[in-house]
Length: 135
Image (cartoon, rainbow, N blue to C red; front, top):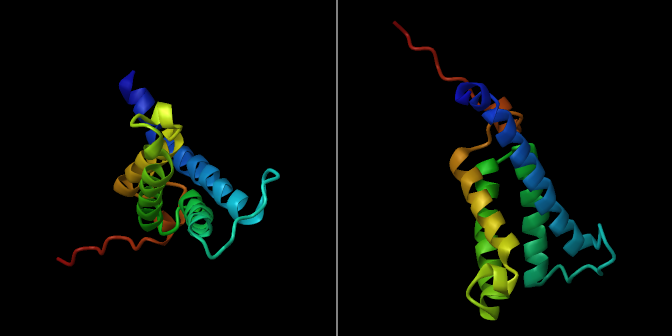
């Protein structure tokens, strides 16, 4: 049973990377463009503007699997900073201070950084094959 399920792991991981990347990118587009939703865009030359750029660009890079580890590492750090700047002062626990999403994004991006791009990624398509040893 475990072997049957585990053969799907690379595909499930790719779907996780794509969906989480797109969801993160939407947070950025909401900050920068006011879309989706009806919130006015934030000032680009502000801390929220920088966060929006990291979310939009980082999320898209993660979703397509380009510079995946770099984008995931920066995005993870951004979410850690967001948690401590915007949520931690409202209580210690994320469930109380409404920082659950920042914590989840932080650790999912940390996992993506550690795991790498996986299948269905531009990184895996452009990666050089290992050289053939000469005998």
